[in-house]
Image 1 (cartoon, rainbow, N blue to C red):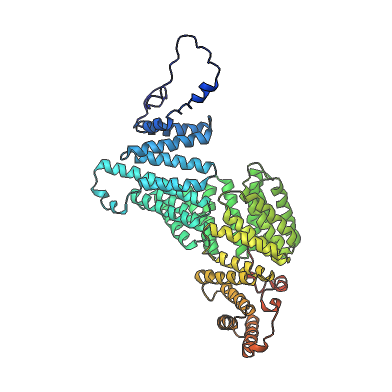
Image 2 (image 1 turned 135 degrees about the horizontal axis):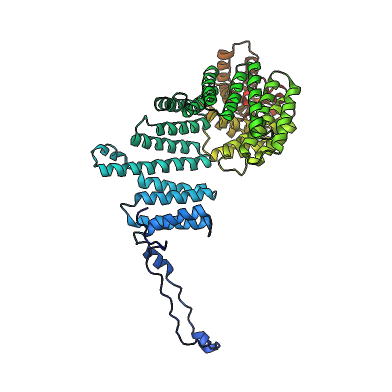
Length: 593
């Protein structure tokens, strides 16, 4: 780092504040205080340390020196550790800011170090403004891009260094937003970083491919599969152009592409990419990666109802993982869970429960170093199997264990919200409506805070919370939730989607209970029209809607003698119907994370 002088590592700062010189003569004992002397005594003025520090900041060599000290303190972890390193980084930023032009890169670097320390201390929210300040220092204005070709060579080199610093800052800012569950802001930062990188390196550089794949993974987490597929295809094209045939980079791209296509329902396309990725891993001797891909191949075969081939893939992966990682590794338990799900789907319930128990034994005492999110994910899948088997109490216990593992983990808000939503459904099914409403409320609050209030899942969650409020006779709150759910689902799914129609029916019922008959009739007429177009006039759901609409029209004709109906009869999804008919009519309102 330029400017680091002094071999003894002492900072080239201004001289320290002068000390009082001690006299060579023997010091006499101080006289005992008397009332007259003590009353005239004045308090000693504190040393002007802040003023001296501010004056020292003008030294042009101080900033680089403090930045080096901050890095050394982070690496060593001694003498105060992170707090000391953070103090050095913040002082370095102040000193470099005083230098002005020419110190932008070092200023951005010191801010990156300070933000990294904040994140290491778990203070991600504090790191956000620091990183925003860092990228603002080195990100060029939009108008400066057109003149880049006319700049001299020295300025071009400076521009490349600035672009690298800006790219690093935007990616670090995106990671920090992701840790706070703010996926929209995170994706926007990643996209800005990708733009800067492509402008500096060109669109076909292999490093651009890595960033494209990174951004595609973020889109997958946000369930934005179309955008993820475009970016993943671009990464795959660049790697095929620059890498050797059957490279590990290409295999990683194909695995991600298979995940995206599987989520979009293109199982044949996903299987093709998985097989090619497996062949590449076999050629490179990556046995554990081959086993992991075999699990994904088994999942795809299961989706295609090719059960025998699915079992073969799972068993093949299980043998390799047991040999390589041991019987108590969470990856072994995850294969047990997949086999349990397969046997449940094929009606072999005894084998399904046996594999669930095998997985639970592993999750009870996992191998050292097991990731909490991996264990929690397995518990959630087992809970879903127990729910399907009708053992709701055991499913709730498993979800509570998963929640305890993740509730304090940074960056897991969306997953925790999914667990709480699933618990809310189970509480509703066993008749614990207050607990159901509280679980839904906690999940909704987390999704609002993380910026995921514009997703279909959020709309369905609001509808479920409204149903719990109905059972607690909180009619006004239920109406607000149904109205918000309608607005979200109309935007995300459309007015004719089954989830949206279900919310329409519930909203009509709540309007009827509130005495807003005309509003309820208007909604039911729309629902009936759409259901007749989609399902035909002979469908049982259409018949139900016809009867409800006929009753409302009849009551509207004799409003004076309107007979009050209980909410039990007004609502389509009452507690008995959820228990008896949840798998048929309202299956789309059950949550699976």
